[in-house]
Image (tube, rainbow, N blue to C red; front, side, top):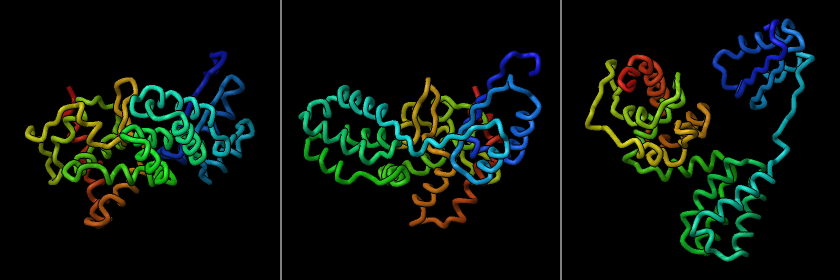
Length: 266
């Protein structure tokens, strides 16, 4: 590293690192030993141990973005969305302005929250439906995700659970074709089993997950973190399943991940 004129390292989501203590120690060491040719950009949720560790490094400058809503970007996205979706494009200008105003007021700068609400609004077939949807906007992302889960077909919830867990614990990026193979794998016993009868079409994967999985450059990605996945599973199954059972199932998926991954590699 000393031989390079400038070195740039980008670390995203420090709070999701499985060995946070080791990573924070490495960051402190590398900033003290590598000189001014090293440039670091780090992102993280605001958590006490990360904040304290980074504050001990004089060269690190922290900036909180929570109170800096990206309303200009959100406003541009809303305008674009309303212009390209036929049902929303056909509502009168007054209602379009109302949609934009209400979403901006309640978004608190959360782009993802706005995008999810627009996905719901585009299915409204009348101005009255749009107004009713605006009157029932969820207060935050967690409530939005809960509503999405409730709408997932009961027959598909088991597959949705499996897909979200595999994406959350993935050691590499899956394709839609590979995820379609995931639902064929059963981990109900100590021996992983593959059932071709459970095979689904790749394009069905996104619809099964009800908007909680999206694509970026053809790669399926969850729009929620592992922690949110766990919270949502508790919410989804709390009426019929004990939390301990969910914990056991998640542990089983994790244990079998490496063992059964051969089934979905091409």
